[in-house]
Image (cartoon, rainbow, N blue to C red; front, side, top):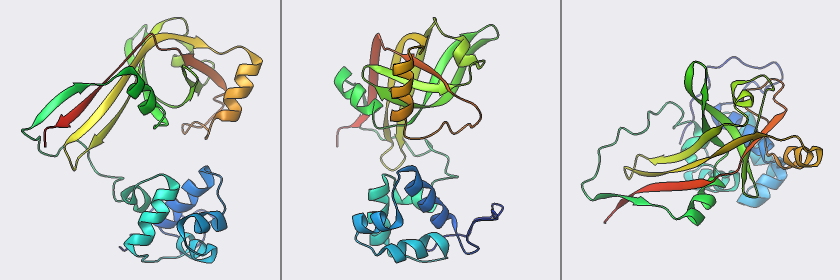
Length: 228
């Protein structure tokens, strides 16, 4: 599987031969705190080969890509960038489809599988839906924002939080919806714990150090299921 060189501007400190595959590998590996040697050991490859894949144009075997993607917790399409521009949800619906409600325990499990969700709040201009990087802290859904941001100003109001997954291959998917009151986190120890637990910084960048949390009072989910 040959990767297509990125057309994005080259960073000054980035290897000249790096492709989208190498860039995505390096970024995901760094986010997980893995060295090249550790990644190589976990997927059965030499650390020098990982270095080569990250810094040069290469055509690794599909088996190698599958093992690397598995260790990095992504799909091969995610790793190669094949899914980056794909419009999801356009596959043909199947005739044997049923919408199944999820139990609360399964909803909580699914919440732990994602890192980006959408929070719906009300503001003077009307409803707004905001994407946020989040984490699960006990019963709470927590995320960081700017102190003056719309989400921070929604403290003390009822909000909704949603995540979903769409599978175009099977024309299926699921969604989870949590509803509850949004709170600002003010306890120093709790803030310290959340900051230490967070696996990444908010993708939006900027000084987003104001922690918010939602303790769901209603947690529901649905799955598109197929009879065969």
